[in-house]
Each structure stands twice: as structure tokens, then as C-alpha cells.
Image (cartoon, rainbow, N blue to C red; front, side):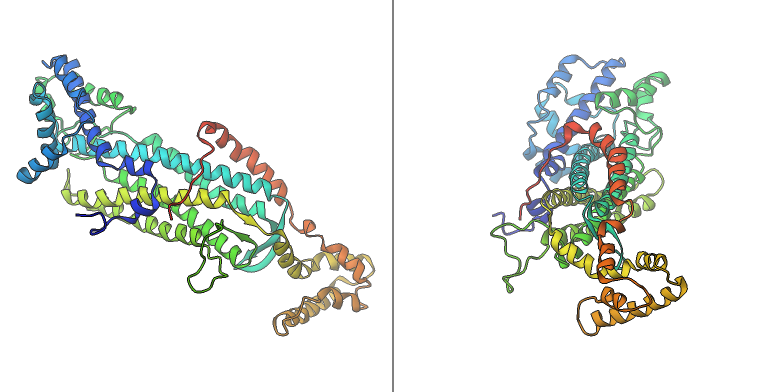
Length: 478
């Protein structure tokens, strides 16, 4: 069979990185199974079971040269993936065959490996998330003083700066990082607790020695690079763990989606554009178009990730007593695809933020078209200083604003509010006086200061703590 006559996942073909694909690969999964079997055998040997070192050494020689053909053939006979790989490992390790998987149940390798895979995947997600924060921080710093229209309800509102807007994106990613850090700090292995979580098989192996049974999980955890195992479980770790993982991924996706929406809106306004390559085609029909396809892809994949978070939540809720197997097929797909999609979205984020194009003249044009409306409070104060009545001025400026608005909306002309005010004797202000009020920087409040303060107090400590992980760049596949 060729590779083009069957379904292949777009997540591996188009979106996810090679690094993330490897973490969810067969090679990583089954080599981890073998490492767990070695950790179990070593622990049992150290606690006094008659397992000679040569058996351990033999197992170590065959961690990575997995005989898949033997395992596949065996699974067709026994319909059990773990026992098929126990058999295949035993074929390669005839001396150790009798002690592989001793006292364990399938979830010993299955669940512990799932935790290890998620742990490794979270490390890669965290690295990319930190780099997105770094790139956005750079953008915020560069654009902190550039006045632009702010919007509430997508209606022009009091001006802000483009850099201040970038801190709003940044802050959501910082919150995601906080959630991810907490999740990582609480992630534990299942350990080896037996068929219903009671460790009955180990109590039998160690002839009722409770103290030795207490040592099994901590010893396995240490060998596998974890601080601890979950203190209690049924046959599996609680599927609420998967829910917490998926929720963190969904949170990151929501932040990416929000960012992509804002960029798409600004690209419509011709104020900011995502990267557009020299030979890139924007539309098959309209050659002039520069569609924001990267940000549209971010939004599209992000929605998938957010919806995917429902799968682990429902699986967690549906588990019966000490375990049922209706989790397995679902979590093989939902967890892997959640990570692969998030990985792809973060690569897109890195690519977009690193190449954002800003058009200050367009931003200024849009701002100046609306600024007279927003400057009316200052104009009114100047008119009061010139001897006017505040209440009378307020009513008159309201009337003139409505007239100017009608000129813009109905007649399609430029905003002529300043000219109308200058011509009105109520205000005692010349057009030249009024234009002095039109410096956009007078209307952005504390935005530049807020950017500096946020970057120095919140973002810089994060980047300093992850200095060695910075400098990532992402090229998108298609």
C-alpha cells in the first residue's frame, strides 16, 4: 500500500512539529513501557526479591530495538496489547522473561506511560508558550508609544496604544503559563497498585511486609524522574488528571484564538498584517488579496482544542468504580490530538508574532478621523477657560457632534467637527487653537507607562527564569 491511499491525520501531515509527533510515537511509548518494566524489576530486586542483576542488564540491552513484528503477531492471537509486548520483550530477553511485569497490571505500563508522555508534551508546550510571550513582549515594547483607536463593542473608543493592546494578549498567555506551571507541579505517576489499586499482588510477593509495599511507588517514581505517585487509585489514575491537562490546553487555545481574532480585524482595517511571503497566493480568484490564513488557521485549530477538552471531562465522569475500559479508545485520540493541535497552534503563533507588519500611517489616519469626537471634553474645558458656560457648551458640542457624524455616515465626507466648532461663536476658539488639541498622545492616558510597568514587573521575571529556552522560531509546513 502507498501512503496516499489511506487516511493520514492533518495534525501530523500539516500542523504538529516533529518533536511533538515523536513524544506521541510508537517508539517513545513502547520504549517507555520497557523502562517501566526495568524500574519495576529493579525495585523488586532492591526490596529483596530473587531477581539477579543479569536479568536487569539483559532488559536494558533491548529498550529501543523493539521487535514490533513479534508484538503485532502476538496481539492478533491474544487480543491484548500489553501482554503482546510482554511476550515480545521476553523473546528478546530469555533470561528475564519470567520476571517481566511481575506483580503488575496493564495500567502499570499504560497509565504511567500516559503520564510520562503528557509530562514531556507539557514541557514542549511550555517552551513554545514562553517563546510566544517573549515575542509578544518584544512587540509590546516596540509599539508601546504608537497611539491607535481602541474599541469597545468594535465601536471607536478612547485611544490606547498598540503596545498596550499587545499586553492584553500577553496577560492571557501569562495566565495560561501559571495554569500550566500548577499542572506540572501536581502531575504524579500512577505507580504500581495492582488490579484494583489495593497492591494485593505485592503484599503477596513480599509476604505481608507492609513497609516494603509502601516503598514500591516512591522508588519507581524516583527511577522515572517523578517526585511521587498518586496516593490512592483504582486500577487507573483518576481520569480527572486528563481533564485538567485538556483544560490547560484549551485555555492556551482560547488565548491564541482571541489574538488571532484581533489580528484578523486589524488586517481588515489595514492597520496590522500577519506575515505574507513573496510568492504566497492570497486568493485563487482575486490576485490582489492578502488573506490572513495563518490567523484563520490558529482560530480553526483552537476551536478544535477547546471542544476536545469535553472528551476527557466526559470520560472522567463516566468511569465506574475502580475502572472501566470505555476510556481507552477515547483518550488515545483526545489527549494526543489535543497536544498535537496545541503544538501546531503555538508554532503558528510564533510565526505570526515574529513577522507582524504594522502600518502606522493607516493607524494614524483612522485615529485622526475619530479623534475630534473624543477630544470634545478637552475642547469644552478650553472653551470654559475662554469664558464660556459649561452647560451651554456641552449641549452645543453634542449638537455639532451629531451633525458631524451625519456628514461622515450619510454623506461619506471627512469629519468636520473642528471646523463646525471653530465657526460657532459660542466657543471663542479658532481652528488653529482646536488643532492644538489633536495630538493623539494626549489621549492615551497611562498606556505607555502601563506597558513599561507590566513588562518589567510581570513579563521580565518570567523570561529571566526561562532564558535558556528562548530564541525559538517556527516555520509553518504549508
